Image (cartoon, rainbow, N blue to C red; front, side, top):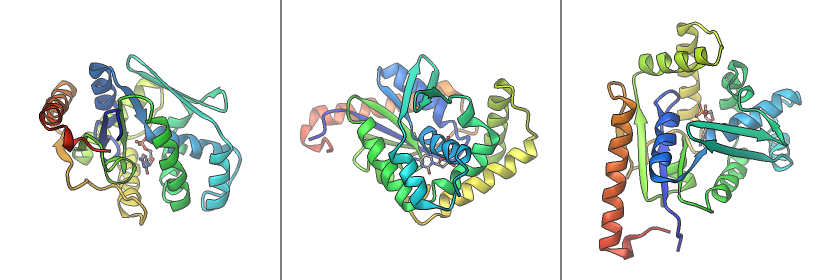
Length: 235
Ligand code: DC
């Protein structure tokens, strides 16, 4: 039986997943795992190595032969690819535009799921992504699905990118986000979709604190139920 606790947070781009997941992890003393960062890291490597983004086998080889290290300290999460820091590089508009193409390949996803399960096996974790509650951890202790209007999501991404010194027009961002949502939710393997037993939270009009509080409340309820009836513990 699995001993560690898993909170799965899924949702489309800009729905507030990262900020929320990081804060939930911090409040609970859990590890934070950003699975999107792994797909981005592979995409960055493929672009740098001029690998055709449709060449599924080559992408899988690249993934198998690469080492990704993730680290989160207070609110900052960082990533190293084969020992080289790539925290900023994986957020570039070029990677953002290409990552959905890489993430569409079933064999890439299979390998990523194994990697994510390994990375999340050591400690209590908050895992964020698109298919965490449906595919990676269908037995998660708590599943959250975050949504928000396209406008709110684009505004959030704009602010995030501006803070990092990346300048992009709002309309361009909206088009990018819509395109990514479409590919992510229509792909055949593990599409972006709410798990039947996930709690959906529309964050359009919520503050980050409110989102975090709702999730913590839901988690406390789950733990209390598990304590009352240990047999319902998943895993
Ligand atoms: O969360 P993000 O925007 O950094 O994710 C980047 C892309 O990675 C996203 O467009 C879809 C893909 N992704 C995925 O397919 N499955 C996941 N579990 C996480 C991300």
